[in-house]
Length: 148
Image (cartoon, rainbow, N blue to C red; front, side, top):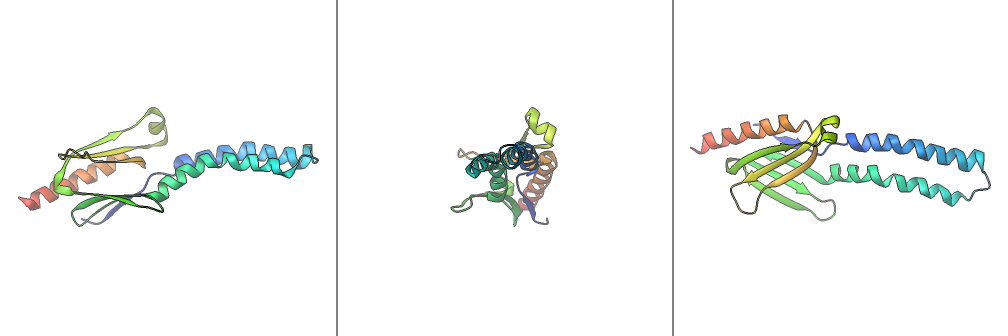
């Protein structure tokens, strides 16, 4: 099977960035045209709004789920990194969770569980999680077929 790489979606980040542009634009208009005597430090308030979409961008950059060489690996973190590896033939259950808002955005959470007590791995906010779950299930069945 070809390598599969999945990252969390940035759809929410793009939408939040667009929504933040409106109040930031209003703030710029106020500071430069309506009340030019206002200190320029007030513009820093607009930067605070950018923290919300930045959170989703960072999540997308810091998480990567790969399927390669008969294993599923979840890498999380930018500076320090946590890697969880599960053999494809050890997968017990693959679930897709989608809240109302996630369904509107076309994203969802993928939960991969094993028979081990330590549980499994969860990747939040990925695009089209059901097709990813189906591909994982097919890869798991193929790996179990090879093991027999």
